[in-house]
Image (cartoon, rainbow, N blue to C red; front, side):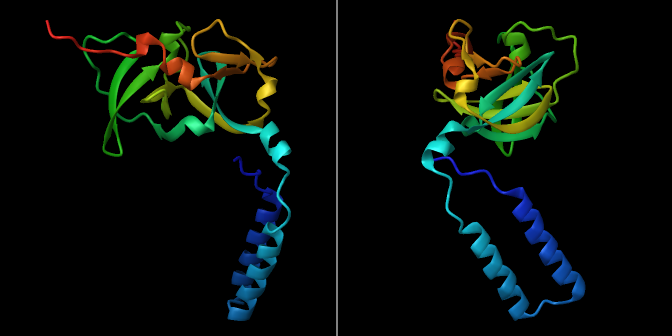
Length: 193
């Protein structure tokens, strides 16, 4: 079930209250209790109706070459800068190699090469570790943009391209990680000679 988006104005107001209390030296138990009670009342407001929550979903947006992409945050396991890449022999060029992320060896997929995009632009510098269709792979991207709440209906269906679920009128391309990871080109098996 999707959580409603946080009310950032309330959060900022609460932080300002706490900051002013700390600045004035009011750290008595009564002052803290008062702040906590007010915060509990603010966060205990009625939740957004389930139908409203279902119309908006969080999508992570990022850039590849001159194009902008999005993917559902439910597939995202980690985001990290690209620090060290170890090339792997005998794999397609879109598999850039592997890296060690928190003690786990993770394959790196360069979507620019997979989709045969112009790679003359900025060098990719970020990794988005995603999971789908039984695989966990780090996507090599140029930059992470933001997380946006969007209705799935905002994307016009695009069934023809591999791993592309839809495109918005603004040009934002929605990746379908499960469908992308089912592509047989991403499954590489070394067979004995």
